[in-house]
Amino acid sequence: MVWASLGTAGVFEALTLLATQDKAVRAASPWQDDPYDAVVSLAQFTVPMLALVIALRLLAWRAPGGADRARQTVRAAGAMTTLIGLTVVSEWAAVIARTPAVVAGRWPSVLVSGLVACSILTAVSAVLLVRWRRGRGPSGRWRYDWLGDAVFVCRRIPVLRRWAGPDAAVGVRRRAMTVFVTLSMLAAVAVTAAQAVGERWTDPLLIVWFLIVVATSDLAFCVISNAVAGFIARPPRTRRRRIAEASVVAGCIAISVATAFRDALWHVFGTGLLTSVPAVAALTLGAGLATSVGTAMLLLACFPRDSS
Image (cartoon, rainbow, N blue to C red; front, side, top):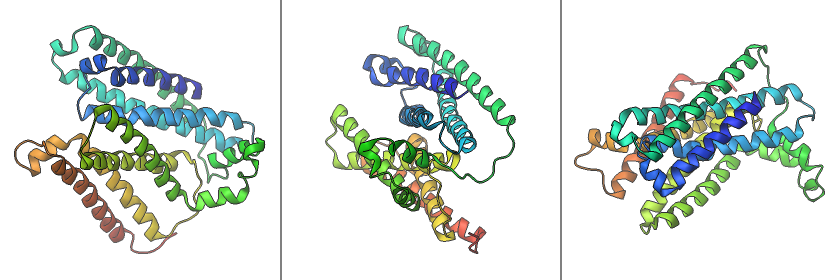
């Protein structure tokens, strides 16, 4: 079922790249506008990342911890399939919302046909994953993680052996949030640079705002996917740290949602058309800040004592 999920991811990514990177195809795409494009853009980068780490983990399939590895890999495949499914639903919503004249034509027909195929593959992958999980009992606390497998593989490569010791893995586990932030920023810088060059952006505020939006969405993806699939087994954390991290993730998600639905939100909280970069930045980042603070206050009230 993991191979089926990887195959589905390959088909999905090929169709997504066609719809987003070719200018002629993108101009005819039914889901070229927000909020649909926001979902597609997120999946465009997160789905191949999950597919890559799943494929790489197969290199350590015979290492110790086979039971944990199987469950974690299936959970990662489930997360990847869920992302694909949500994107497929978003694209169908875009198709339904369009007029028949807009959906008609060569490229829209090709994209919709690809969407049908991707929908079928996603459904098959989801059924296989659900059937596999139903055949397994409840899982206890994981003893192994993906980081341990990475160390296992690296210790068999002479160039990397000296850097892949147990102490390095322990340090990464203790600083998992720092690792997630660093990876998110590096990915965001690359995406923002490509976008700025491709679109010929010259407004510094627009570039900084886009960098923050991409970095926060990547950070939320890293933390949530790690909680689902156990990429890095994190040690117990204090109540304050757990609340702080949950609040940050909630704020990151709010920024992504506000960015996708910024026009609709502006009709509620603002006047006129949303055309200026400062207004967009204030609306989206303000929504993230408000959500983060509100989440922290709610969690502090609901969990007044440290139960770690």
